Image 1 (cartoon, rainbow, N blue to C red):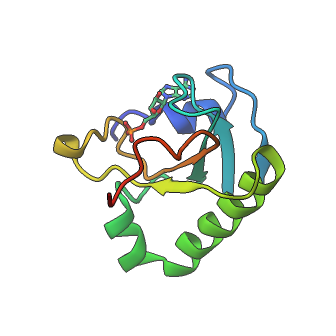
Image 2 (tube, protein in one colour):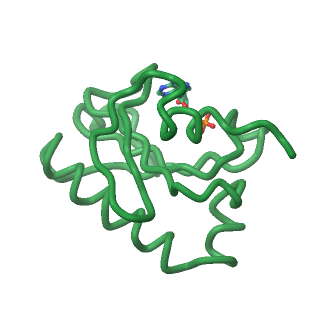
Amino acid sequence: MSESSIFTRILEGEIPSEIIAETENVFAIRDIAPQAPVHLLVIPKDAQYRNVVELAGGDPALLTEMIGLAGTLAAEHGDGDFRLIFNTGAGAGQTVFHVHAHVLSGGLEEGRLGG
Ligand code: AMP
């Protein structure tokens, strides 16, 4: 058995972090090192998918549920506009290999992607 991910340990209360939203399958926390005024992480409770490509192939309904919660939280915690980021692979900056979506909202006009 591999060690539990940091997110599983948060979900199980082993590491302190406020769970700001929770459904049967998904939960959300604030990122400990925010990159925007609102920076949340939306995470499936099931840790089996290491990244969004595995998740999309294995359980697309769960990915859809994550995106729905991201939208709800962006409206509750920000102005409803948000950037959704799935770092995929160490070379892209992924450090936790338990799939999670970064939800960034507020102050994103500067440095936007796509020119
Ligand atoms: P990634 O680099 O895409 O794998 O994202 C992992 C994210 O988890 C980073 O943005 C970290 O700041 C965040 N993180 C790590 N530990 C914690 C923690 N204990 N509570 C909240 N966020 C965390």
